[in-house]
Image (cartoon, rainbow, N blue to C red; front, side, top):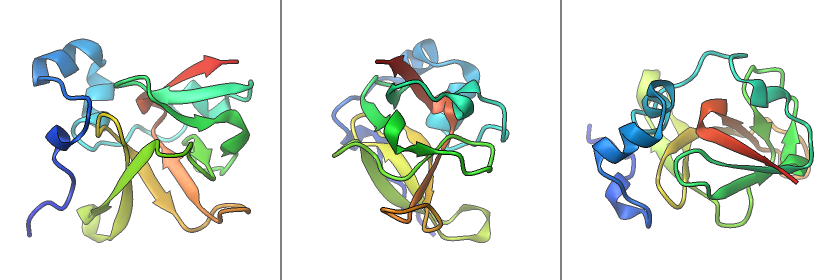
Length: 138
């Protein structure tokens, strides 16, 4: 089956593999460019509660505001709604399941997945790899 994930070249921000490797840590590269997942509970941003914005570590695009964050108990930062236009999604068929993969709409970097088990008002849980985020306090 062909990979239904988006081609990274279709996004407004593109970089060569060398540029991505220079910008990202090896862990960030594995998650954001190779669709990996960080270990649960491994990122301090899971507990970040200060007012501010969580942005894409690949291009600094604002993705989520602190007010959209909640504690899901999963071990990854979780949000119930992204900022307008901040994310793109694709179908992920890995690991024998069908999931909705979440990407930065600006650079296409893999951020995590979205699930239909979040709190009101959206009922969604954007389960995001902390290494894919940069936090900018207000």
